Image 1 (cartoon, helix red, strand yellow):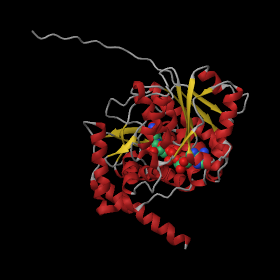
Image 2 (image 1 turned 90 degrees about the vertical axis):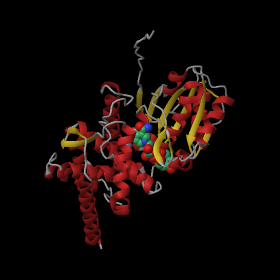
Image 3 (image 1 turned 90 degrees about the horizontal axis):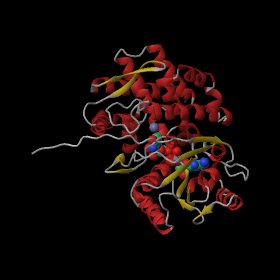
Image 4 (image 1 turned 135 degrees about the vertical axis):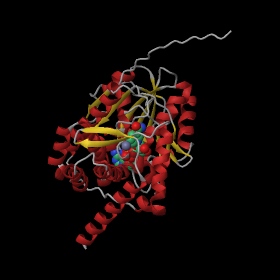
Length: 383
Ligand SMILES: NC(=O)c1ccc[n+]([C@@H]2O[C@H](COP(=O)([O-])OP(=O)(O)OC[C@H]3O[C@@H](n4cnc5c(N)ncnc54)[C@H](O)[C@@H]3O)[C@@H](O)[C@H]2O)c1
Ligand SMILES: [Zn+2]
């Protein structure tokens, strides 16, 4: 006799994101109040330590003064896409969690760029089926987007983020002081996720990015911090109020430009950073939307102009690799990743968007040829 139990349950999450400057100043009580008397395994991005040599001692002194129980001197792990390329960083973190007896009421504290947050987040989410993770993102992109989300993962089978989980962090601390040591390129990278989310959701924010583009491109840290704050807020609101935090449906309302970005990152063997690739992906998607008659020419030019003024290059040879077939393979991979029907988000106006379920190879090739032409013309104008 067949029978069935069909039950449902709700798990509620809290998503805490703090914004501060100098989290390790002795009197800054954010971290201290979060961890209390529990054990903390500290992990720092080697790229951050290389440019901010006092980072390790700052954390250790802060912990000493505030009686935080660090389980060891901070582990310093290679950051950047390198740390997502295989299991080695994940295994090192798992081993440390086991060795230091980090339980489900202790914390892993990770300070670093989006790549290290993704790898350490993945390890933390599978150890004991999930230990508490506090993220301290240290790049513009991770403070504006990657670090405030609920995803983590590493790259496997030559696919971005193929292995990973949806696991909300215990808390996120965005410390704007970390941004001081970023290279101009890494400082710029995060602005692209702000452009993306503003274009999709917030016309006023988009206008303010246009107004401030010159100072943002010049690295004005106070404007960049404000831009991160709004971008992080829009991303977090989408996750907490958008109705599909763990992406169970086929729509990806914030993934504008990302099918192109992920494919170009992989095809370039990660020579292109995520931010650089997203800028190119935005240009492709925006021009595709124009070609499909969804988005006006004048608004598509506003987006392209803004990206150029922020200093992004909007063409890479990977777009036309194998006559564009490699890029089109990225569209199929995106469909496979979503499951079911292909669903791409495309802009219909600044602040508005729609889902489309088809994008022809001809349209994509026309647009990439246009971007190539624009790029060559801009090079010629410079020489
Ligand atoms: N989980 C998500 O929702 C999500 C969202 C967007 C992007 N991502 C991922 O984030 C990654 C990109 O992150 P990113 O842009 O932060 O770059 P990144 O993590 O690759 O870091 C770039 C470089 O900056 C160094 N670095 C980090 N902080 C520094 C600092 N303060 N000063 C000097 N150097 C510093 C790193 O060591 C690295 O060499 C990609 O792997 C992307 O897939 C994840
Ligand atoms: Zn992104």
